[in-house]
Image (cartoon, rainbow, N blue to C red; front, side, top):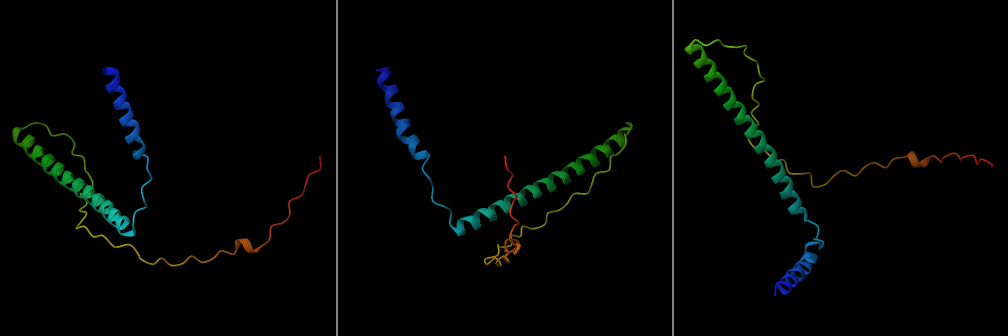
Length: 120
């Protein structure tokens, strides 16, 4: 019985495994644009999170410094850090719909000199 169930599981995996490698159709232009916008929004969200972390770190450092001074503990050297950069509001510029055609190059217009043939 155990052999039968093992065979059934292997057969099911083999049948369903083939569908996992099926080729998907290419994304439409709208789907590509949405994906690019989502990618930009995620990058902006990461910048906002870094900004918020920076501000929180500054508040904690300032509070710790004040508490140490009140307690009379020796305060070590204060390390200057760069200011926190605010990313601002999310702005996504839509991609250009029509790209300018590239100018043809003239490098192929000049014929190449024939290569000398070495005799054995």
